[in-house]
Amino acid sequence: MDTGRIMMAEKNGSHVIKFIGDVRMTLCTTIEACLKTMFDKTEFHSVVVDLSETDGIDSTSLGLLAKISREAQSRTHQIPVMVSSKEDITRIVQSMGFEHCVYEITDGVNHVKINLEEVDIRPLNEQDAHDKVLEAHKLLMELNQKNYDTFKDLVQTIESGH
View 1 (tube, rainbow, N blue to C red):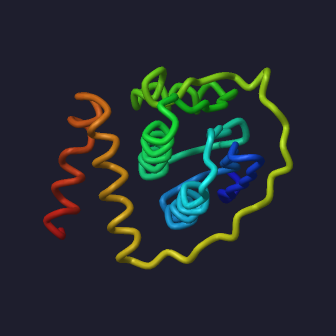
View 2: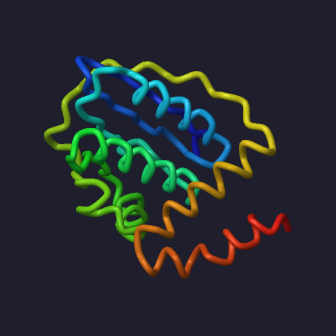
């Protein structure tokens, strides 16, 4: 699998974030920086998350995708779009409860092309990793009972410091 990369573009308040390769917890500070860049802008109209070239994605990254959706919905009152053309990745995001409430998932047939720029990878320290993993899994737990049951022990372990 390709080491994960993140691409991003913005035009007139419309944003695209594209995950490429294997997107893991090691990219959580980079994803968070994208969030900050996107939502610190005064003009925000929409976001499309493109997973069409994602080979793998972990639960921490999925939790941060839930955070992107939550923030976007609070600003636009619309469910953002997720492009996912690989069956295994689509199955993962659907299993987390993303379909319809968190993202409108499409295979990308009508996806608008935009010039994306690679985001510089941000260093990850132990405290950042701890905080982002905890936050991401709490967000996933809020989505549905299945996620709550899946991640409650992990969250309790992280919170207890073991």
